Amino acid sequence: MGNFETADVLVEGKKIVAVGPAVRADGADVIDARGRIVMPGFVDTHHHQFETALRSFLSNGLLTDDGSGSPSANPSYTDHVLQRFARVYRPQDVYINSLFAGLSQLDAGVTSVLDVSQIHHSPEHSDAAVQALIDAGRRAAFGYFEGDGRPSARYPQDARRLRNQWFSSDNQLVTMVMGGEVYLSEEMYTQSWRIARELGLPIAAHAVSGAGMRPILDDIARGTGGTGNDIGFGPDVLLIHMTGMSDLAWRRARDAGVRVSVAVPIEMTMRHGTPPLLTLQEMGMEPSLSSDVETTMAADAFTLMRSALTMQRMLVNQRVLDQGDYTPPTHWPTPAPGTPPLLNVRDVLRFATLNGARDLHLEHRTGSLTPGKEADIILLDTTALNVTPLNSAPGAVVSLMDRTNVETVIVAGKVRKWRGTLLDTDINRLRTELEKSRDHLFRAAGIRRDLFAYS
Image 1: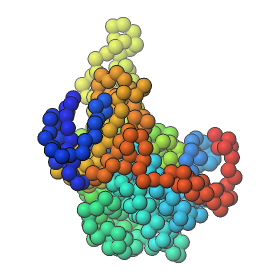
Image 2 (image 1 turned 90 degrees about the vertical axis):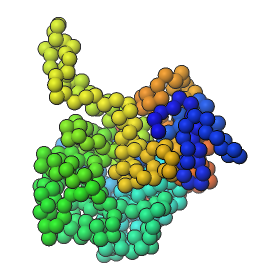
Image 3 (image 1 turned 120 degrees about the horizontal axis):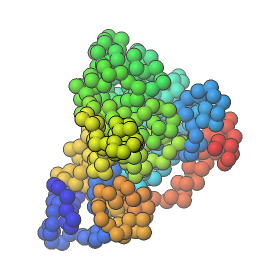
Image 4 (image 1 turned 45 degrees about the horizontal axis):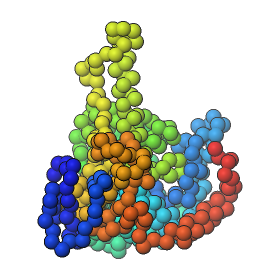
């Protein structure tokens, strides 16, 4: 549709039916958006929502203990979150954590998410995760990943029940994605990928440096992965992080139409490896953005966009400076042929909206303000102290704004946040329930709560 300095967006029911200057709509209810940027809601393609009660517990934490004995090594994500906390989650903990995460992101203008819920210890845990996504009232892809392998677990076979019970239609607000982690046994990931394709579900899996995944992904890239050598890349696959992977895996992923989600702040902080933004450019690919874990970093799109922008520009800018010798007249060199172009604010805004919808196979429903798509719309306040006066709409969103600028949020035509306040939500009651869940998790995991010990 292009961009408009002044225009109207007409919504009927769930759908956008017109966008442009002076749209006629006799009898319509009107939202006066003067002084506001009107844009599609943000899309987060990888968020572990069940971990909300553990927010900031691992502000210094690495993915795995590196044996250094430093505050970053212990506590670590693998040892403490996955091996200790996750094992003591009850279905009610899954529910309140996932619900609160969804409402928190909705408040920040994130209208769509892939919930990577690696907490499926039993069918009851799975049902609680789905119900939380439904009750949050935003667009979501329920990521059915593994649990801790206890006897009551039904992963991956329970995908058939979940699909039939909760996701009989693909035309609903909450859809389903199959977790197909390759760090599990070959038999396990083969089953999960086969079941996903049997049920017509997209597949999502982590691909991370330092986790031993590179040779496995190479096998899958060659088409020789899995117990029957029949598990291969395709456009139904979303790889998360994609750090430390081989040139072969990258080429085959690109050629097969694989999607890539990057979680730049987490990748930089937790030693996942350098976010592969330059590799994506070299491959002619574009990523979507994801928040990953609130144990370590905020889960809002403004943080993600600025991190991607500044990290990529840092790498490219230093590469350009190094092409000179830091003394006149070559202290400010012209970029050499083949130097990756600098990302700009429009690029990362696209990563956080349209690319996210594409990677969750929702681009026909959301990701842009286009007639025929569903009305996932946010209004961002440009009259606020941190933005005014407005000189660039994309620049203001990416370089200046934060979650406080998200004034109104609409999902599928329904107003969920109005003039700064979430509707139909008792935040005080939910906060109390989340705190009770946190207290249970620390107590059951045998980890002492201390506001200063882990920083």
